[in-house]
Image 1: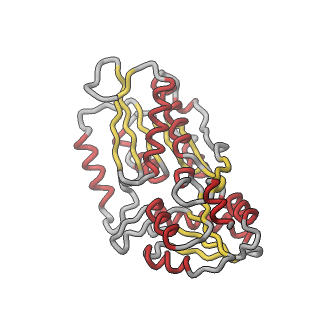
Image 2: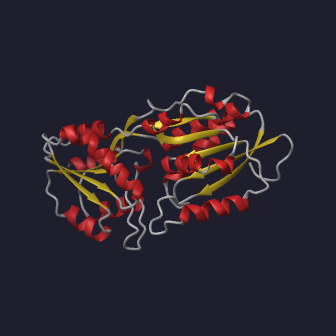
Image 3: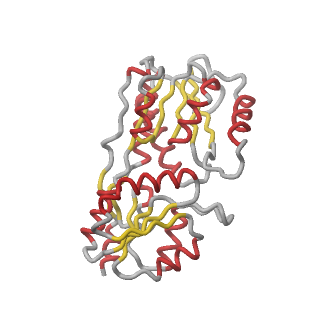
Length: 299
């Protein structure tokens, strides 16, 4: 997917919502490339932009980003744009003039967000849901003495929206288990707080960042610190967290989502109108567990 573009090649742009060093991007990228390779009948050149749309404190950031993209791709005609995650899709739709008449295949967007695109031209994609309640229920099944659920998230707008989503879904369970929501607590304080939790507590990790204190930790880094400092059962919602301290959960696979997006992209590049392609991905979640962590946490 590199080199100069020939007359027979197609050119696509992948827009990631996150920073380039976000671990979750690796899964999306592997999946998108595998999906493109599995069904392509043309050569493809890929351009990638890491938009860092969770950035705080610069209200003019997106305007500057538009200027950069206009300058960088002034002489480029794309055949397809793949915005990955909510913010990248919102950015692409808001700044549609950057990619006028270019088909869009979005990746990893909540189904309720994606539904608003169905009356738009030249757009389809891959949706997901987060199984908050199913993951909490399996946590309570594995740890029946649990009386308290600690839900962890970060400080960015992305994280705040995720926490609000979790609160709305989990509210019916509040009569049967005590909830505590912790958002963006500095990592040393978070580890200390969790270390002081009783044996009747379990953790649901939504996602973690904290740029307020300048540390800019990501979820995987936070998990490593938590696991090293305290012994508490942790559950998660993305399979990219397996092997980093979580026991499991009913999980989304960014790699699988990426592969679906890549497969849809090949259909569009091969001439199928994107608006005629059904949105997919909603039923892709599955229960995944790390046996080593189950044994360790159940001792």
